[in-house]
Length: 590
Image (cartoon, rainbow, N blue to C red; front, side):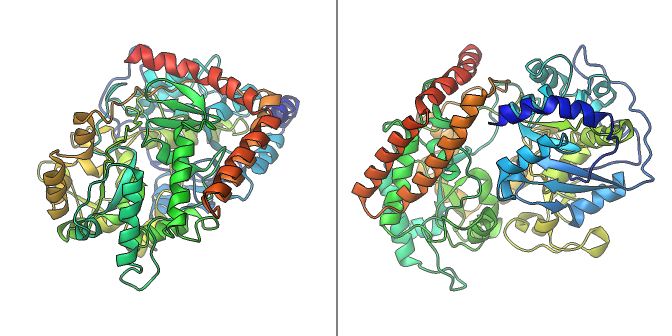
């Protein structure tokens, strides 16, 4: 469907491009503007890769305030970027970001179609790879081939940018997200992306029972909820809470948990750590297994009854308030953990299940599957202002602000040049940290970067400190977080961290992260996918809350029959062929 709509746009875009000159009204991130060398003194201090030597960026004027529309598939927020981050952008660039977020718009597909039909998605565009390729094909994205070499922070990632754009046609059109320079097979974190994480104090109260499988985990969560039916404030708490607004072709909460058992959801198929590709509807696959896990949880009464109607922000609040006893993504620990709760023995910790085989990719050296582009309707002057801004996003200063925050409020600089979090820095995800009015005012969370996606990953090494941008691996952070919880976890599992434990026990072997342009849906496949995703999502939610196992099985079987009637087998065949190059590339890299 999307392909069909975009196919109609070429004439429209060509006509519109002769009329429109200025930027829209948009939103996106970051900073320095006072210096045309915002890639000069604030560069990573390394020469660009061979064939990508950078030059001096052209001078631009910041006299006039510029509002930029950012069409952003990653954002959980729609509207103007305000607060401390917005003030930094205003002071440095004299820009204001207006974020257009399909994820929270109510109907992301309709928003995409409407804006593409108008010939202007946004001034800055953040899209999944396939959509970016489509938009390039029909002229919605500007060619930056002649410009990018003027920006040294971006040029530090020239190898990755050039490789990515070879799949996009001639020239340089898009900048991948989450790149790093640590190498294509490195995995540097001490935690995996997704595994069960539960409060250590409640687990210890239960005598630290063995967790051999999902049923054991459910028993523990049920016991926790029985012992602690409310949080300290008296609010009802549950074993787990879910949310609906991240769903796409299937339920995202289920998708994240398939990684516990060696498979990752991609469209209509499951891609395995063993390089297999199987249909999402395979009853031996991890999607069925984890959907059944949620069903069993609801049968035990441990799923938050608001799960089918609440959004991500509400779920976040419940994590912060200790109203849910299971979290899974490693970054969610930012909502639950602190050195103080760690000393109390109460941090949420990763709990390996005996039968797990974790799917984990290496760090996103070549990018994460999304990309930034500049809208083709942007004027030349504003294009240069956007490029200056994007270059700053890839600079040490910009990356520190995006991944950490501001000096003085969130972190301090030690005598050796390394960073240490302040108390507010430790607590910024778990409590309300207020910002002085002269720095933007409001609370830290509301003023944080709402674009929610980065050109360079936090696992990148900051040349100013010799440590990663992500705080979890700072020497000061590791020292302070060597708490009672951490010590007790290490004693129980005989490993320094969860990655070490999983590797030592043959439960994880990172697969190479591959970022390449893949086949675009044909008109027919796009229509099939659109129809099937509604069936999968609607039925999956009903299955979680099914009355009994017979009803669950009936819903699943009926879903499969409906899907076959809408061309599911053709979609699976298309996606199997589509993702085969990923498999081959991983095999070659292993």
